[in-house]
Length: 349
Image 1 (cartoon, rainbow, N blue to C red):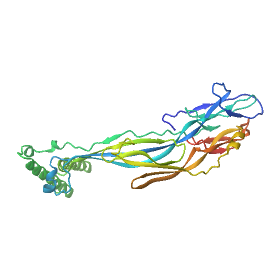
Image 2: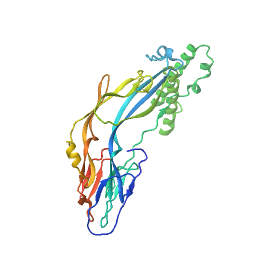
Image 3: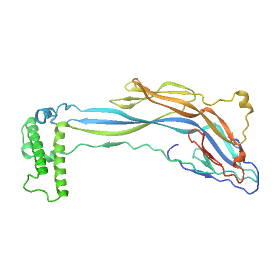
Image 4: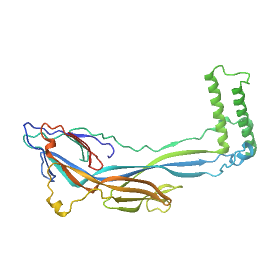
């Protein structure tokens, strides 16, 4: 459901012995002695998670192979975006054509109804799990190390970039040799204990990594997530859900700089719909809930299908009612509804 969902509990009680709880269609502007509630239309949502990798070359990049035998080092900065995952889920949006009132009659104990802030019915005589869904905040990992603090006087006084690179590479090799000597116990002043040894080695590793960045450069990674929504009223045939560029990241759906991510949705007609005559004869006699129909959802790119699953959709199905006697005085009926579809999740008597 939507962010910051709060639980609204409405308890309507009166004294008496026996009578039936009544449900009627909601009448705007008419004060009702009961609980007004809505059933949902189903909205499909896609959380697209991506990373942005920004590469910054080291100032000695062109000397990486010559002095450290590190090949393939890029000398130019670059930015690369990549989709890492798609999370598909559903939320409920109040359907203004499906508004009802649980009436409180004399000599009746009306049920306890749990509603969302938008008025969707999610539970009767019990409490539904309304765990809030939230997107992770964008974050960036910083990988740059301050290498210049480890440059010696000879390196800093060198008269050319090539000479600075050569001396820095030699410093890196000296650090590696020092680490090997410590590990072999071949130094005169060995650390006295394991903790001291770790501190020394960690510092040498930091120095080596920082100086090596002057040759190999470093990459900072930004993690971000965008949400895209679809509220279908009919089948959807290969419609652009969003576009994504390896250079620019998420772009507008009409921006051809990005490659399209298509969505296709097809109703599987798993629920038999009433015809016009049956619809006209239908009476609201009991608690109304949705009977959603299953739909096949496919997400694809130019390379092929990357996601496929069947989901229930309220707007492709129909409604039904539960017998009003289930909620008479003394009844222990407990009901939970799917907040995204309005269908029954659990019914216990």
